[in-house]
Length: 242
Length: 236
Image (cartoon, rainbow over all chains, first blue to last red; front, side, top):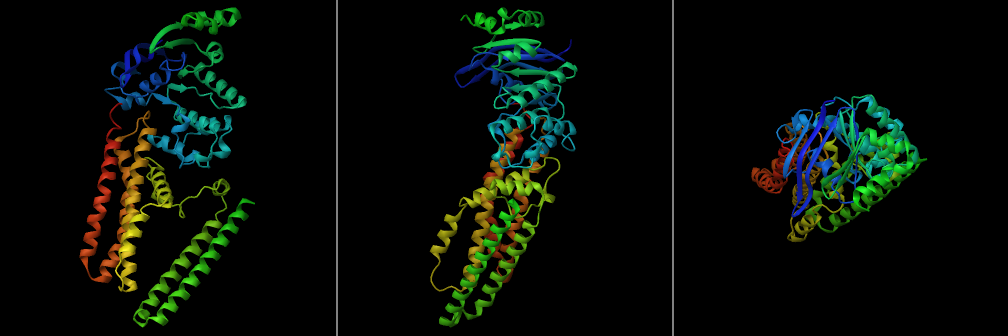
């Protein structure tokens, strides 16, 4: 499989604090990679660095053959980052926000696939309301729709199930798995939900203290699914030295 | 139900406005009857009140007749928004940045904007100038302080929009043009009363002085917009 994302020796510092320290990661087309790790491990920073919104101190990010530093626009055409709910503009409506993102991606209008996702997530009835009247769950759904607008080949999702009601969470999980299974989309999902990682991901990567500590491939994950005593939770605990 | 509540609110506001206007007009007439030198200014003041009343009532009526679900939903939420929608102002390359800036300016203005400046100017007025002069001065300061609020809000909204769209392949030129659209339109709108006053007063220096003052309050926000949109093309 061809690598859609290639992160090599990535280092990110926040002031004196080293958040990512020599991270190497590759994602192939059609792969669903779950990024797990304790709080403060650097999962969000890694996603933001790949999305080009956090400055890299060292290393390189290559997306579909485009270096993020040298050709940021070409690289960003390939990625879709689900927007963090608190970052959404309170003064715009959901529909206006979608139109803004469609414009930024050079699309003539909001794609019908985005509205279809809105129906799946039950967000359509409130799309004309201002975002400052949205609940956390509604904001999360809108953030997901913004990340997926225009069908980018690489999805970057940071805890997208936070705040979602069980029905919407299941609907989005099904949608995401089906999209990745079609082979034209890859996903990098940062999550604390080991259940999602173990059941749906094709690979799980454990990030700890800014470094990739361990990685579990399809065969190991299949074994975990078949043998509950060898769960991802246990494997992660062992890798963490708990 | 929501529409009925909105209509009732508008009716109450219009009624209160009418009563206030009548009281104000009566007070003016009383002042004129006491002080003869101001008598010639009364028609202008009454015309202004009448015009404001007509525009306000027409706008409120037009607004209450908008029956689409979106507007009703916003009213249910109790969210206040600009009086006119003005969708034709939008930039299709990056839609709704203008709306964002306009609403941010409105929020800032409603929170007080530069009311301190207006208050200070009014307080510093010497005793004795004609009502026309006072009205002209208030208009000049009002236009200037409104423009200052718009520029600050536009710069804030533009920077926030660029941050929000940081992971998208946003084109720097499109972002800059879309961000400058509202400040440009607002500057022209603010300049209109200034030009009218300068022409009626027969003094071009009024307009020139105002433009200089407007330039002073606009320079830093415009620079912020240029800086925010310059970072778009380069990676973080």
